[in-house]
Length: 190
Ligand code: SF4
Image 1: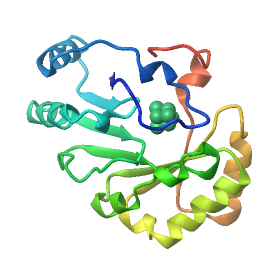
Image 2: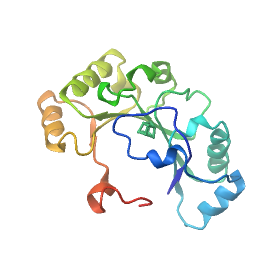
Image 3: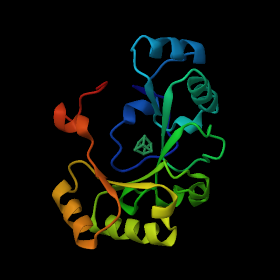
Image 4: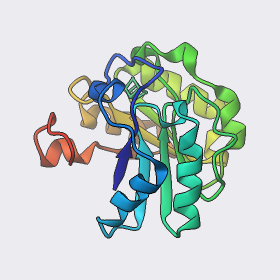
């Protein structure tokens, strides 16, 4: 299940969760966990917006892990991940040129990643792809974490990206925003 926290310090060109910038309601950590328990699901992903913008998200993740949940964190990669509980699986973006947020990438974060964490590139053009390839090499990313490639929905065809990956025999995992193929792309809460 997803816990979507309010606000983001970035403004990616392709953002599909702008409603998370300001919508939402104040909840205590206890009430969030209580709500999570009603779903009978042991896998919880903390996302946003940018979850790390709220310091209390660290405590929320810790308490969830203490209570036996498998916890994932989805973060935009511009804020430090060093204090994230080690039991949490980090899924961290590195923002590509077409996002307009390239300068916000905090590359020091790479040294904090565990092998089971994931670095995600959302690719909208050939330029983004070539940039991501270079970053993988420069930071030896394949040795540090799992690498995910995904397309900017509606901007780059999945088949184009997959063909580039196959041509270059890249050691990356291709992923789709599955919910946009199952439901209408704009449907929320799925
Ligand atoms: S980091 Fe995520 S939520 Fe924030 S602007 Fe970029 S795509 Fe939107």
